[in-house]
Amino acid sequence: MSKDSNEEIPKWKQDFPIEQKEATHVSRREFAKFLTLLSGALAVGNTAIVVKSLAFPEKPLEGEHPICMEADVPEGESFQFEIQGSKVIPYLLINLGQGEWRAFEQKCTHLSCAVKYRHDIGQIECPCHKGYFNPRTGDVIQGPPPRPLPQLEVVIREGQVFVKAQTAYIKKL
Amino acid sequence: MSDFRQSQNEAHPNKTNTLMTAIILLLILFVTIQIWFLFGALNNALQENLNFAITTAVGSVIFAVGSFWLLRYLPDPIKRRKKK
Image 1 (cartoon, rainbow over the protein chains, first blue to last red):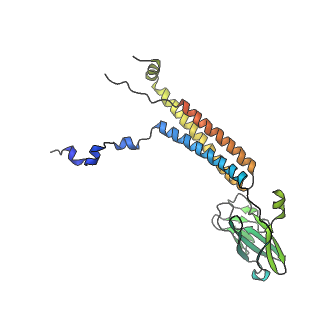
Image 2 (cartoon, one colour):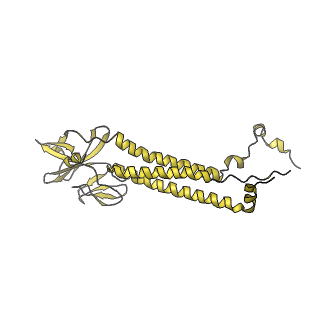
């Protein structure tokens, strides 16, 4: 016994008979054209980076910003703060002891995880991929981060902690 | 009637295949290098290294133009002769 094939196929399929093989088949010509399109998109993306850097250069931090009182951050501790500029950037203020203070951007230069200061090992640690930075210079000691942490200059005046852009950074610009 | 192209296609059916494979491999090579450039430019632009970003952008555009130029040589599908 054989069923009538027309009974099994719904009517809408009978009206628009497109085989699945035809609908999903990608020919080598189409694949080559897709690769070319991708190549064009990558070129546009690469050019966009240059245009963005030229048209919208990052402005250095202007002026001094009060952060907290000196007594608020004990020796070996860190304090997180944000500065509202053209965009909000989180920073980490570190009291290294003996009057040494440092402020670094809190985003790891690898994949932007939040870094933290570990006084027990005397290093700044990125817990995501175990990147370690020098807490005095911000240089990479170990791990995947490609660049040092951006640093701010810390000024202590009358028991209050201020930060400002590093003098060397301003000169470079 | 058959023309020269038709005779060539029938005499050397692998030619189209080889050409197509070569073009696709070249395109994959171009795209891979461009991804490498883009990755490098992103990392270096963040470090205020504009020269690297400009160099890779120029290189990437050259590769893109090369990719579009390669499409000129994309062989047409061999059409089977209709049976009479």
